Length: 104
Image (cartoon, rainbow, N blue to C red; front, side, top):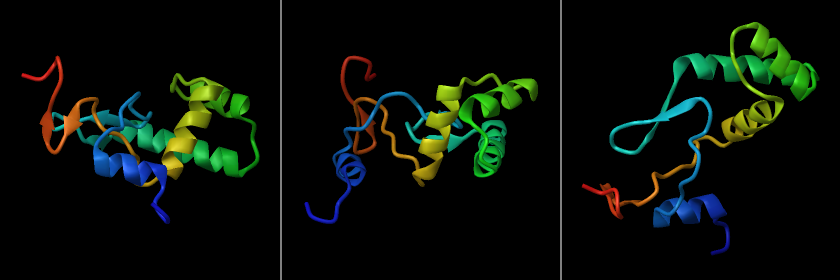
């Protein structure tokens, strides 16, 4: 599997899951769709981070602007935003159909 990242391997096998990245929601088909308000907040956080501000300072400024996010949430949101496109699969989502105990 030389040249493949772990994310690519997992996407090809359809085994990713976990928490939905901040800035996105899950569509009815199980795909990630951007949440415009949160995407704008991520762009603002990126600008603040590029200015050299600490994560706690960014979180405080975002809170003052009406966005409730912790410093750890800022770090996670920026890390997830660096991966484009974001990597995520609904648990049990394989080849366009849901499987498992919650499948209908």
